[in-house]
Length: 249
Image 1 (cartoon, rainbow, N blue to C red):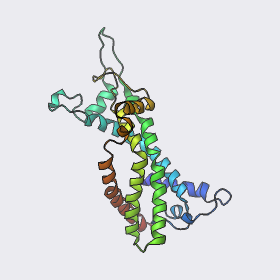
Image 2 (cartoon, one colour):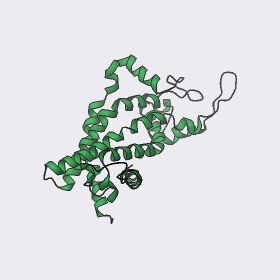
Image 3 (cartoon, rainbow, N blue to C red):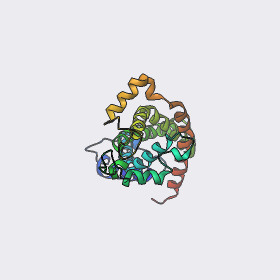
Image 4 (cartoon, rainbow, N blue to C red):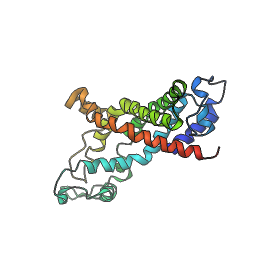
């Protein structure tokens, strides 16, 4: 994801934000964040980083969506006896979604769900990752603020900005992640066992969460996710920024 983020930052800088006729310089366009995107990152305003985040999120969604879909289905298999589980593992789950053929009560074959079934929940994944706008936009703003008002070293700035911006991301995106999980764990229907589909769209899943638990349903499990976000992403950004600073212009 960080690779595509760097790529889109450069594209936006070279083709949109570098034109004085379109965007006037802002304080956040003066300094860079480490050397992510090298010169491109050093010229983008916060909104540019946010837009690059949306574009990177959309790109990675086409890789992440099927992986998250398989993971979600495996995580809701609670049977202690493994022989009673629908899927024995990720490969088996993928195979059954893609190519399994079933037979109904009158011996008519169902078609497998195919690639479309594997990408079940893609639209919800794209919506969830559109909130990368707040992650990378806030990362730029926090970094600039720490540079201006503190004497922290560059790695320390990367650490605090990476952790805090990740928490901003989860505060803004968590309800959409809950709905995404509901969609991805919704039964696909025949030929797979487990029931018929309940949700035919994002709105159906969101309404179901509200009916069952009200507004609290959208924040179930938020605290562990929020607490984990800071150290995991802070260290990831420190490492990534350090690598980028070693690369030539």
